[in-house]
Length: 116
Image 1 (cartoon, rainbow, N blue to C red):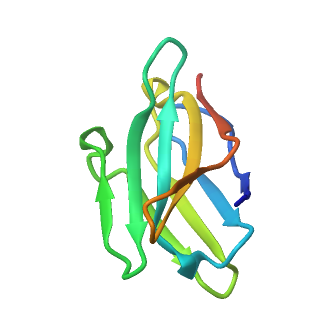
Image 2: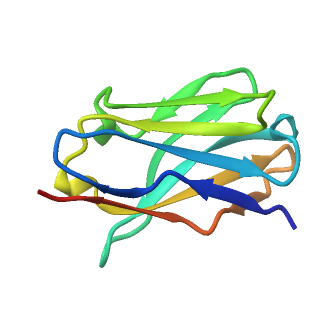
């Protein structure tokens, strides 16, 4: 069972930034892709973005260039940089990793709250 250590969530004012980290219990090279979904209260889980093993990124339409995803192989960690955060970005952000066999593993989630 793959586990993830997630960190970096918190409370930020509108226009602020946060960086989320996600470190799996096995090497990130084992994953075809890693990324994040988010879920706000009363809403469905929504795709935020991902990074593949060859550093190709895909993002949800709502991101509009505000977020970036990167990976540090030496630290075995993937990062989600959240910029220009708005109240509608408030949600629990879930890290995931998709294995080569297409199995998806989920982290426990980290809360991001954007409020003045």
